[in-house]
Length: 255
Image (cartoon, rainbow, N blue to C red; front, side, top):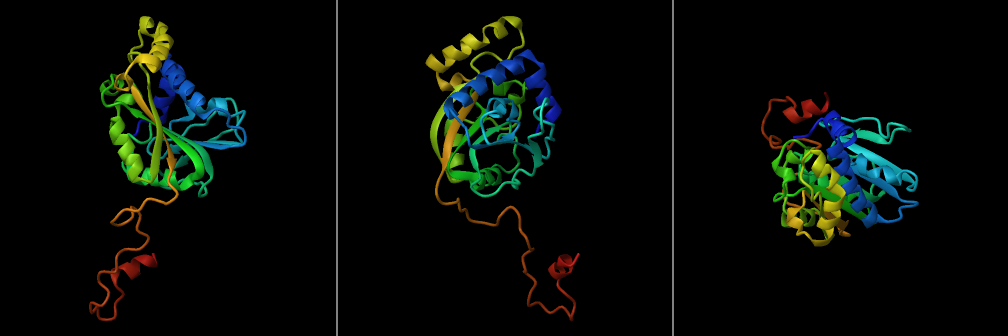
């Protein structure tokens, strides 16, 4: 279940709680990635609130927004850097992205394996992906007053196993959003202090979200079974007498 882009925009840009959440997540992203001059950066889902610091540094910054969610112009005060995409077909070349952030993308995806396969395809050999998902044991995933209360929350073991299945190697992990998902002034006043305290001394399982950083393996993931997209139907009727008529799959090819 994808949230509407307007709901996400209103939370992150028009509510004090959303701005506090944006600050907590973005600080960790900036710290982990460091200098990005000359790099290509992409964000999938609704990751654009985290990418603004990189606009002046990176060679290219792209916001990939899934079709069921919708797209908006970003940044609001400059040239557009966002594009509407199918979750498993991004308009990016192989090995073209140096840094990839995923926020409100994986937990709401109908096809998480296909989504991560696409992330694997576009990530450069030395690239790094940062996946942010609601924490199964955290407060934020249990309340639907914020976008983190929608979709499938994960434990750290679950998200790392999923990444490994799709050809990634987890290289680091942390948590964020240690303050309650409340818009009350008291909690908002203490949000930054609680966030700093949480990163230093609070167990990850108490954070509202899990952050897992990963690099891709050299070989693409292979799994048994059919690909999600079949370019031609199976030719199961070939060889069956059909009185001169074309089999159904050939008729469809010409349409």
